[in-house]
Amino acid sequence: MKRKKAQGEKASTGTVLAARARAEGNKWTDAEREKLGEEFMKLYYGGETKPATTRRR
Image 1: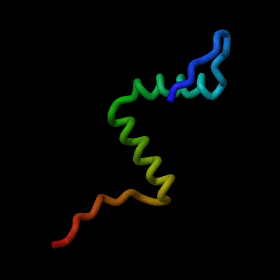
Image 2: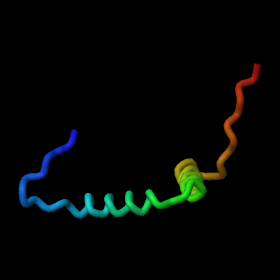
Image 3: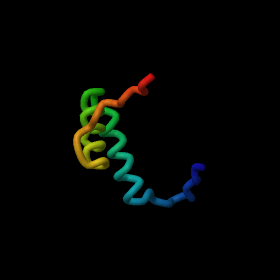
């Protein structure tokens, strides 16, 4: 749900920073996005990424 700003109300600091981050992120290539995603997974799960295993039949 979007909130309409009252006339004369300034954007918060967080809103301005998020807009800048989105603008910068939109310029990334697919390879850069994939690399960042892998780095996040290592940080979040703590270790090297493993390929997804398939179900044995």
